[in-house]
Image (cartoon, rainbow over all chains, first blue to last red; front, side, top):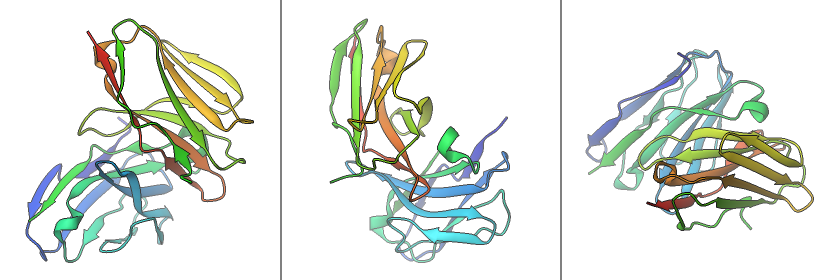
Length: 114
Length: 111
């Protein structure tokens, strides 16, 4: 089944404790992206990657890191999480023709930083 | 001005009615338009795409595009309580090479 897999689905952590949210897709998509979604603010792009070893900042990159060492994986790293990073996170991917097919989203990760 | 604008709602319609959801966008050169449905706490799910002016129908859903007016809409016929969700309009930014999302319209279908 074609899908984007995120883990974990739920995570509660403490301020300052480094964490990684994993994202993997099995569709051989070139493009991958991370979003956060907060009430009233909609989906905001954090980082995106056009292909292996190519990443760039989205609209709200502060406090986040990413890497793209393999085509299928695009982990999101929070080096020192803070309470304002409590949010619902989505990973998404698309083929090079994303303009034609849109994005496929992962199931989401609900992160709480206390 | 936001790049993609939607009324946040909620839009409340009775079961069986037609729900009409609207979206405007600012980039005149945009060519691809999408509607996603998102249930609370779940991920967005693609339900319609449209690329040409006019209407595109898929079951109970009809997407409408008017590039001259920079306007996209989604009609849901015979609305069901299970259609209650937030509907996200998304526009492919040809200059930014990414999907740009509106903040969504919450639809409530009353039994």
